[in-house]
Image (cartoon, rainbow, N blue to C red):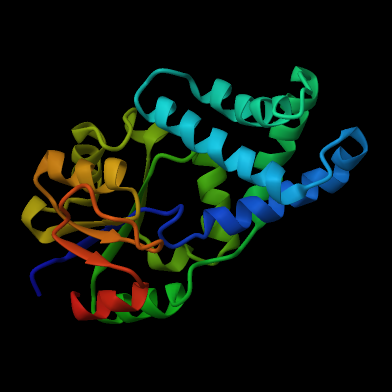
Amino acid sequence: MPYQHLFFDLDHTIWDFELNSKETLLDLHQKYKLADIGITDFDAFFNHYSLHNHRLWDRYTKGFIKQEELRWKRIYLSLLEYKIADESLSRAMSFDYLDILPHKKNLFPYTIEILEYLKAKGYQMHLITNGFESVQFKKIENSKLSPYFIEVITSEGSNSLKPNKEIFEYALDKTNASLNKSIMIGDNENADIQGAINIGMDSIFVNHINAVPTVHATYTITHLKELENIL
């Protein structure tokens, strides 16, 4: 087989971040009685959160903001949509969000089946993630993903972020993997696919939402089962 090492992204690729995040925000909406302060439409609140989270993550990965600012400001800006400028509430909700989120266990369809399939074929599988290290390890453990991955490479551990070459170089060194025997599997074209291109690694774009590709991956799939046709 052409590849020996498979480097997976976690959030939005195999761990269903949107669904898990929505469940977490619903818990917080109820705990903090947000309906009593005017946030009656939870779906609208979650949509605001998703938009601000996406924008702030983009700024974080580009080095414009620090981790702590990302953590609480995504909540603060969501509340601000309802003219609620409450930093203390935002920080409290942010703390609880990161405490609750990693206990959610929703994976994309066929995740365990494909990991079992790839493990049986002898691939060495690893994770490369920009997510917060303490949170990511809890997600992996609680979702019962630990048995499938040998190494977990985080932005904090590598002191770099996807799509920078340094995090991929760190990953190759830590796993003793050769570039031409490795492939990156992820949903984010900017972080995962462009990151792989930056170091010269093959890639698989996991296009769960059928978006129009903007970066050229080696392969593109819309369902994890399709990995069986490649690997």
